Image (cartoon, rainbow, N blue to C red):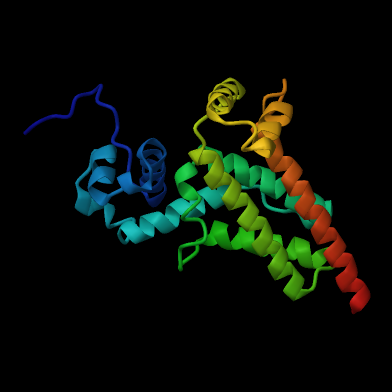
Length: 227
């Protein structure tokens, strides 16, 4: 009979949380398409069949991944006031989606949301309703905010630059090929805005968010007056 080595490291038990953390690492390295039961088993050093004691299959893993990302987003706190709660939530969501760019397309695509996802959506609606939004206006506000958050995240993930220096290089190269007389407004945007010292594309997210919040504030006031 083989006697275990005294200095052998104890085997870490397999749990659902451990499986999902391994899946998150896989997705962060290679995108969500790289997540499979076989690769998960390899990542964890176990047989694939042993995973099914903790997850029902790949769909369950994807549901768990979405829930894990939602768990990283700051829950809107109603006591902050709806505007500050939505602002902080949107900033936190952008940070989470930058850490996990593969998640953007999945966030609202699952039909069996997990507890973190449900808590998140409930908190968003609670902050809006507590701020005086009608049910219909809360639904529209939720939709327009998520469209902006996810849309910006998708755009940001696909841009051919990630730093101000890379942006300046890309924009400069485009300007060299761009006939200024044919595209005066694009040239103006690049020269007087994008290529100015201190320009930060990420700051556009915050400015755009405040425009949306201003519009929602006006809509909420008008809605309250009408009722």
